[in-house]
Image: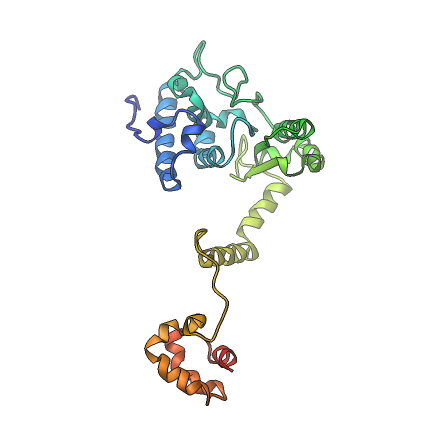
Length: 281
């Protein structure tokens, strides 16, 4: 791939400040354009492709949610930082990767304020992010430490040592476990096997599905809280689908003694007869 791809939305983003001005609905297009730009650049210069492709959406999300560079973002393995470099003011030099005087293939402090820690390989991100987080906590200044670490790097002892001390940072430390089932080669060992079982277990999948269904039922952030129940028709949300039969329902209400009196309404309003009977009694 030699020609530069068309990236109209990405062209408007030079720094994460520009990214955070976009609407959430635009982020999918931005991620697609960012991926295309990275493939084009690596196709010309060579370099690490797969590791960067695996974190395109994650890179966009982190810079969109957190206040980088005030929040210090540490990539555990630096060669997955190509998308990060494109979004942090270095897109005009991204095609100088792996060339003399060009961009480093890893994060590099002298390149950008968005690279607070130089990383190559591996398992040092949590310790570094913890240091930034605790330093800000001691000084009383804003800023979190954000570590992005893969399942392969997470198996090293230094990562566990950092996690053992993570409580000192309180909520200023964010650790993102990028479980992509890949290290230098496919990972082996107990941690990898545990994570594989975790994400494929029936209990986890059931809980995730339940959480998804619950989230869909939550009101939009701008929705006002529901009014307290009164004797008015509007106070019985289950009766709304039965509005045409409201007069007959209310007239029968005084004579309802068992759930069977309300059975004809079941297919319409979708509420179990027992629940309707208890609501009306």
